Amino acid sequence: MDKALPLLASARAREYGPLAAVVFEGALLFTNSDGLPDLSRSSHDAKRWMSDLLDAGGFKPVPGDSKERREKLAADRQAVLQGVRAAMSPIRVAYVRGMDDDAAERERRFSGFGDSDAIFEYYKIKPKAQSELRLEDYHRRAALQTIGAAVLAPDSEVPPTRSPEVVSTVHRAVAALTPASFEGLDSQTRDQLRRELSETRAALLALENALS
Image (cartoon, rainbow, N blue to C red; front, side, top):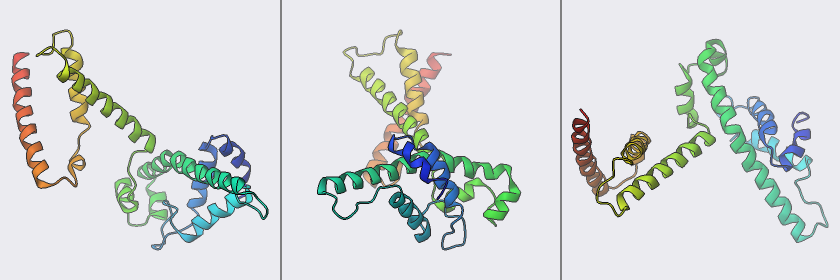
Protein backbone atom coordinates (compact mmCIF):
# COMPACT_ATOMS: atom_id res chain seq x y z
CA MET A 1 0.00 0.00 0.00
CA ASP A 2 2.79 2.44 0.91
CA LYS A 3 4.45 1.86 -2.48
CA ALA A 4 1.19 2.20 -4.38
CA LEU A 5 -0.23 5.37 -2.84
CA PRO A 6 2.35 7.81 -4.30
CA LEU A 7 1.76 6.31 -7.75
CA LEU A 8 -1.90 7.31 -7.79
CA ALA A 9 -0.78 10.77 -8.89
CA SER A 10 0.55 9.35 -12.16
CA ALA A 11 -2.64 7.30 -12.51
CA ARG A 12 -4.65 10.51 -12.33
CA ALA A 13 -2.60 11.64 -15.34
CA ARG A 14 -3.54 8.36 -17.07
CA GLU A 15 -0.06 6.87 -16.67
CA TYR A 16 -1.01 3.50 -15.24
CA GLY A 17 2.12 1.43 -15.80
CA PRO A 18 3.98 2.13 -12.51
CA LEU A 19 0.86 1.62 -10.42
CA ALA A 20 -0.07 -1.54 -12.33
CA ALA A 21 3.36 -3.04 -11.58
CA VAL A 22 2.90 -2.48 -7.83
CA VAL A 23 -0.70 -3.73 -7.89
CA PHE A 24 0.53 -6.91 -9.55
CA GLU A 25 3.16 -7.36 -6.86
CA GLY A 26 0.35 -7.03 -4.35
CA ALA A 27 -1.75 -9.62 -6.17
CA LEU A 28 1.03 -12.16 -5.66
CA LEU A 29 0.61 -11.76 -1.90
CA PHE A 30 -3.00 -12.96 -2.03
CA THR A 31 -4.24 -16.45 -2.79
CA ASN A 32 -7.37 -17.75 -4.45
CA SER A 33 -9.64 -20.51 -3.17
CA ASP A 34 -7.12 -23.12 -4.37
CA GLY A 35 -4.29 -21.55 -2.42
CA LEU A 36 -2.57 -20.29 -5.58
CA PRO A 37 -1.42 -16.73 -6.32
CA ASP A 38 -4.44 -14.55 -7.07
CA LEU A 39 -3.30 -13.45 -10.53
CA SER A 40 -6.88 -12.61 -11.47
CA ARG A 41 -7.32 -10.44 -8.34
CA SER A 42 -10.70 -12.05 -7.83
CA SER A 43 -10.40 -12.84 -4.11
CA HIS A 44 -12.14 -10.73 -1.51
CA ASP A 45 -8.80 -9.68 0.00
CA ALA A 46 -7.36 -8.51 -3.33
CA LYS A 47 -10.50 -6.51 -4.15
CA ARG A 48 -10.57 -5.04 -0.64
CA TRP A 49 -6.90 -4.01 -0.94
CA MET A 50 -7.56 -2.19 -4.21
CA SER A 51 -10.66 -0.54 -2.83
CA ASP A 52 -8.79 0.63 0.28
CA LEU A 53 -6.02 2.00 -1.93
CA LEU A 54 -8.44 4.09 -3.98
CA ASP A 55 -10.23 5.26 -0.85
CA ALA A 56 -6.93 6.36 0.70
CA GLY A 57 -5.98 8.06 -2.55
CA GLY A 58 -8.99 10.35 -2.49
CA PHE A 59 -11.24 8.48 -4.89
CA LYS A 60 -14.02 8.32 -2.31
CA PRO A 61 -16.71 10.92 -1.67
CA VAL A 62 -17.01 12.47 1.75
CA PRO A 63 -20.10 13.79 3.52
CA GLY A 64 -21.20 17.05 1.97
CA ASP A 65 -19.86 16.34 -1.52
CA SER A 66 -22.17 17.49 -4.29
CA LYS A 67 -23.82 15.08 -6.72
CA GLU A 68 -21.47 16.26 -9.47
CA ARG A 69 -18.46 15.67 -7.24
CA ARG A 70 -19.65 12.16 -6.39
CA GLU A 71 -20.24 11.32 -10.04
CA LYS A 72 -16.79 12.60 -11.01
CA LEU A 73 -15.11 10.57 -8.27
CA ALA A 74 -16.98 7.45 -9.37
CA ALA A 75 -15.93 8.02 -12.99
CA ASP A 76 -12.31 8.69 -12.01
CA ARG A 77 -12.27 5.60 -9.81
CA GLN A 78 -13.57 3.43 -12.63
CA ALA A 79 -11.04 4.92 -15.06
CA VAL A 80 -8.17 4.00 -12.72
CA LEU A 81 -9.50 0.45 -12.29
CA GLN A 82 -9.78 -0.03 -16.05
CA GLY A 83 -6.44 1.63 -16.74
CA VAL A 84 -4.62 -0.51 -14.19
CA ARG A 85 -6.29 -3.66 -15.50
CA ALA A 86 -5.15 -2.91 -19.05
CA ALA A 87 -1.63 -1.89 -18.00
CA MET A 88 -1.27 -4.99 -15.84
CA SER A 89 -2.16 -7.33 -18.72
CA PRO A 90 1.32 -7.40 -20.34
CA ILE A 91 2.96 -7.53 -16.89
CA ARG A 92 0.93 -10.60 -15.96
CA VAL A 93 1.53 -12.31 -19.31
CA ALA A 94 5.29 -11.70 -19.06
CA TYR A 95 5.31 -13.01 -15.49
CA VAL A 96 3.56 -16.24 -16.44
CA ARG A 97 5.79 -16.73 -19.48
CA GLY A 98 8.79 -16.24 -17.21
CA MET A 99 7.78 -19.35 -15.27
CA ASP A 100 9.09 -21.42 -18.20
CA ASP A 101 12.58 -20.12 -17.43
CA ASP A 102 12.43 -20.69 -13.68
CA ALA A 103 11.22 -24.19 -12.85
CA ALA A 104 12.01 -23.78 -9.16
CA GLU A 105 9.94 -20.62 -8.83
CA ARG A 106 7.14 -22.20 -10.87
CA GLU A 107 7.06 -25.19 -8.55
CA ARG A 108 7.14 -22.93 -5.49
CA ARG A 109 4.24 -20.77 -6.56
CA PHE A 110 2.34 -23.05 -8.96
CA SER A 111 3.07 -26.54 -7.69
CA GLY A 112 2.06 -29.20 -10.19
CA PHE A 113 1.93 -26.91 -13.22
CA GLY A 114 4.31 -28.15 -15.91
CA ASP A 115 4.64 -24.97 -17.94
CA SER A 116 3.23 -21.52 -18.60
CA ASP A 117 0.53 -22.91 -20.89
CA ALA A 118 -0.93 -24.84 -17.97
CA ILE A 119 -0.94 -21.67 -15.86
CA PHE A 120 -2.59 -19.65 -18.63
CA GLU A 121 -5.26 -22.33 -18.98
CA TYR A 122 -5.94 -22.59 -15.25
CA TYR A 123 -6.40 -18.84 -14.82
CA LYS A 124 -8.18 -18.49 -18.19
CA ILE A 125 -5.64 -15.82 -19.11
CA LYS A 126 -5.08 -15.16 -22.79
CA PRO A 127 -1.35 -15.71 -23.44
CA LYS A 128 -1.23 -12.36 -25.20
CA ALA A 129 -1.52 -8.97 -23.60
CA GLN A 130 -4.48 -6.76 -24.40
CA SER A 131 -2.23 -4.44 -26.39
CA GLU A 132 -1.08 -7.38 -28.54
CA LEU A 133 -4.67 -8.47 -29.10
CA ARG A 134 -5.71 -4.94 -30.05
CA LEU A 135 -2.83 -4.71 -32.54
CA GLU A 136 -3.77 -8.04 -34.09
CA ASP A 137 -7.39 -6.91 -34.31
CA TYR A 138 -6.29 -3.69 -36.01
CA HIS A 139 -4.24 -5.58 -38.60
CA ARG A 140 -7.08 -8.04 -39.15
CA ARG A 141 -9.58 -5.23 -39.75
CA ALA A 142 -7.15 -3.42 -42.04
CA ALA A 143 -6.61 -6.62 -44.00
CA LEU A 144 -10.33 -7.20 -44.41
CA GLN A 145 -10.84 -3.62 -45.55
CA THR A 146 -8.11 -4.02 -48.17
CA ILE A 147 -9.63 -7.26 -49.40
CA GLY A 148 -13.05 -5.64 -49.53
CA ALA A 149 -11.68 -2.73 -51.53
CA ALA A 150 -10.12 -5.13 -54.00
CA VAL A 151 -13.31 -7.15 -54.37
CA LEU A 152 -15.55 -4.13 -54.71
CA ALA A 153 -13.26 -2.29 -57.11
CA PRO A 154 -14.72 -1.46 -60.53
CA ASP A 155 -12.18 -3.76 -62.21
CA SER A 156 -13.41 -7.33 -62.59
CA GLU A 157 -9.91 -8.60 -61.84
CA VAL A 158 -7.09 -7.42 -59.63
CA PRO A 159 -4.50 -5.70 -61.84
CA PRO A 160 -0.90 -7.00 -61.74
CA THR A 161 0.25 -3.87 -59.96
CA ARG A 162 -2.00 -4.65 -57.00
CA SER A 163 -1.57 -8.41 -56.88
CA PRO A 164 1.37 -8.42 -54.38
CA GLU A 165 -0.61 -6.23 -51.98
CA VAL A 166 -3.77 -8.31 -52.26
CA VAL A 167 -1.94 -11.64 -51.87
CA SER A 168 -0.09 -10.34 -48.82
CA THR A 169 -3.33 -9.05 -47.33
CA VAL A 170 -5.14 -12.33 -47.93
CA HIS A 171 -2.26 -14.17 -46.28
CA ARG A 172 -2.39 -11.98 -43.17
CA ALA A 173 -6.16 -12.28 -42.93
CA VAL A 174 -6.12 -16.08 -43.20
CA ALA A 175 -3.21 -16.36 -40.77
CA ALA A 176 -5.26 -14.43 -38.21
CA LEU A 177 -7.98 -17.10 -38.27
CA THR A 178 -7.82 -19.87 -35.68
CA PRO A 179 -10.24 -22.67 -34.73
CA ALA A 180 -11.42 -20.38 -31.94
CA SER A 181 -12.61 -17.94 -34.62
CA PHE A 182 -15.45 -20.34 -35.41
CA GLU A 183 -16.56 -21.11 -31.88
CA GLY A 184 -20.23 -20.47 -31.22
CA LEU A 185 -21.27 -20.43 -34.88
CA ASP A 186 -24.44 -22.33 -35.79
CA SER A 187 -24.22 -25.41 -38.01
CA GLN A 188 -25.60 -23.64 -41.07
CA THR A 189 -22.97 -20.93 -40.90
CA ARG A 190 -20.22 -23.48 -40.29
CA ASP A 191 -21.31 -25.48 -43.36
CA GLN A 192 -21.32 -22.35 -45.48
CA LEU A 193 -17.85 -21.33 -44.29
CA ARG A 194 -16.57 -24.85 -44.92
CA ARG A 195 -17.75 -24.66 -48.54
CA GLU A 196 -16.28 -21.21 -49.01
CA LEU A 197 -12.93 -22.27 -47.54
CA SER A 198 -12.88 -25.31 -49.81
CA GLU A 199 -13.56 -23.14 -52.87
CA THR A 200 -10.95 -20.65 -51.72
CA ARG A 201 -8.38 -23.41 -51.26
CA ALA A 202 -8.98 -24.60 -54.82
CA ALA A 203 -8.70 -21.05 -56.16
CA LEU A 204 -5.48 -20.45 -54.24
CA LEU A 205 -4.00 -23.68 -55.55
CA ALA A 206 -4.78 -22.62 -59.13
CA LEU A 207 -3.13 -19.24 -58.50
CA GLU A 208 -0.09 -20.94 -56.98
CA ASN A 209 0.22 -23.16 -60.06
CA ALA A 210 0.01 -20.07 -62.25
CA LEU A 211 3.12 -18.70 -60.53
CA SER A 212 5.12 -21.88 -61.14
